[in-house]
Image 1 (cartoon, rainbow, N blue to C red):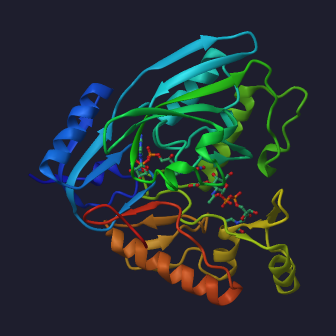
Image 2 (image 1 turned 90 degrees about the horizontal axis):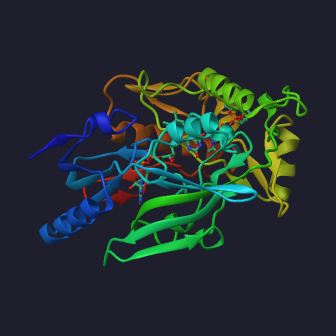
Length: 337
Ligand code: FAD
Ligand code: EPU
């Protein structure tokens, strides 16, 4: 049996897998995991496919999470909301906006599922999901045991969590619990949100502005295949930053609490002259240099070749090695770029 993964990844890469099964509840999920293990085939857990790059046909079974359900518990000062992993992230953010549960509006329009959100601690416009994530519930693939991790145990960082460290590819996140305080304070730190008036702004205003900014910069995967930012913003030492500023006075960097500097990878790629750069059927997006796009039925390997080219040029020019953000999936599972 062979199934095309094209409709299931936002880069629209036309690789196949042996079989794709959708699971609608945790009981089915367990059955399918057992089934794949019995067949001794590679297994891939897939959400919305918005952070994966398929470089080959996957010689195993893809389990697509479509578990649904949102439960809200009201406490004196906060709402506690437990969301099943297969819920669509943006629909959940809209649901919160419409029901008066506020805080997630800066994270509007991020594609993918709720279950994947803690994995790279999704972030945008001055907010990261760990600010609202109370607990993550998961199944261990090895023995199907269920566990919960508190916010602290998740080891959240910038595009980082325990799910990319010790538990990488070891578990399926089944649900996520959020705590949204009733007392709402707008987060307007990020440049394009700064024109909003902190005294009168509503969560709806923030939601709307975030959606407008995103739509103006990021390509819609339904029209132009992409996985959002292809590289993480690199974090460098203050000394290296100061040295670079001598040559590149407009280098964009954000000071981190420990004194290191997070540099805008999009700026580095842009400054290296690669914005809009096209290599066959793939390109660096002409509005956002951190986004690589599939122009016309390209293969994952072509995206990876372009990414490697960018890493080489940027390393040579700035002495900074970019690291990919999406997960690269080969024939048996995750691989390095
Ligand atoms: P998938 O791509 O399906 O999976 C990603 C990885 O997680 C895979 O390794 C998969 O095996 C694993 N996985 C998925 N679900 C589970 C689960 N339940 N349990 C265990 N493992 C699982 N990200 C940001 O942080 N900020 C942004 O602003 C942002 N903007 C984006 C804009 C665009 C246009 C696009 C296409 C992507 C953007 N992203 C952004 C990246 C992406 O949306 C996030 O990484 C998202 O959380 C991925 O969710 P997904 O369900 O699509 O994951
Ligand atoms: N820039 C350029 N040229 C470019 C692109 C960016 O000079 O082609 C400069 C911008 O002018 C700006 C800076 O780089 O000064 C940062 O750009 P932007 O605000 O667009 O954000 P980013 O750092 O490129 C990050 C996240 C995005 C997130 C936005 C908004 C990472 C890797 N990316 O992008 O997340 O939506 O900030 O907060 O941290 C994703 O992870 O997939 C993603 C889209």
